[in-house]
Amino acid sequence: MKKAALILSAILAIAASFAIAPAYEAIVGPTGVLKYNAEKSYGGYTLFSPMIGSKIVYLIDMEGNQVHKWETQYRPGAYAMLLPNGNLLRGGALDNPPCSIGGVGGIVQEIDWDGKVVWEYKLMTPTEVQHHCFARMPNGNTLILAWEFKSISDAIAKGRDPKTIPASVYAGGKRITGFWADFVREVNQKGNTVWEWHSWDHIGKGPNQLDINYKLPEPMGEYYPNFDWTHYNALDYVPETDQVLLNSRSFSETYLVNHKTGTIEWRWGNPSAYGQGRAPSFYDNGDQVLFGSHNATPLSNGNIQIFNNGSERPEGNRSAVVEVDPKTNKVVWEYYTKDSTSFFSFRQGSAQRLPNGNVLVTSANHGHLFEVTPKKEIVWDYVSPISGGKSMCTIEDGDMANGISNMIHRAYRYGIDYTGLQGKDLSKKTSLAEGCPQFYKVFGVK
Image (tube, rainbow, N blue to C red):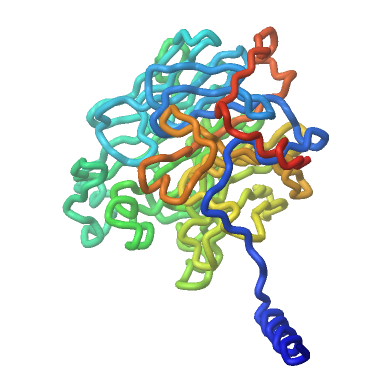
């Protein structure tokens, strides 16, 4: 016995010397609300659109019950948001788009509480297509994010090194023969264009320009580093400064653009994209902070919040939410889990700052929504049970490989006093996973 005790003591000492830390891992995990601390949560209702096999937008309460839903005409382009007038603003995916880049859509619709389309804007031609994002401005106009086609000869004329351009590649079953460059279009309620900004007009090597030869590492494949050049995936408007906020996944940067002049007035996340700072190496992040980022949003204090996916991060894949002060370029708040496997969204994702200071996070790839306090305490934790219009009590190993996915691109939380919910009947509650146990109740998790 004494010998066994000595052996055990030695094992523990060796483990301690190597700083071995315990980790939680599950092959089968429950869906629905996993944790709910009503005292510390902001509360209210959460809006989300399942990405796979569904055209429904759900509004759920804090216990995961459906209180309203919209059955729409199109597959989700990415997400939906609730306007102050109680209508839904939603992106849709049209059939047969001119390119097959992830996030392609083609239409933005405003849908009233009863499901009637009251406004829509289609943007899909052989050379232009709406993708990912949209933003309703205070003046009632709508900002639309889109791609426009540029030929290989167009890119070479702009300075692209022809030796770095593949003759063509295939993506989503389509042959790609040129570049798809990002642009922003502002339209009024009549659908008339009143302003545009084109990334193609800002090519160069300066701090307020975009390098046509900057590209992702080749292991990303031929498509994304080349023809999907900047891949913007976030769009918002900052009325206090009259700036447009953009985020580039491919450049891993966030930008503020002057709405009047079109000048890029601020950029942050990856200085090596414009020849400044240390680029990442095999094992070192260098001076790059963002990796594959999404959903940059302006905060009321003037700072910018960004969902930092952390994919292809040399120092280890992990997602995080960062708040940066654009006046100092310093990160003033950041959230990530100590065990990186608990929170990592390889692609897509979002973070919404709530009125009480909490943050609602969408870890998109796993349909995982959670609310975290400024002190980094999780006070609401939810896994969507919806995949392909059906509900699942558990998510199991291999579901993604078999085409079963509960992915959510972006979710939004609205308080019980939100203007758009006033006068609405939210009393009818329906379970999204009928017959499934309510984890947070069964286990008494506060």
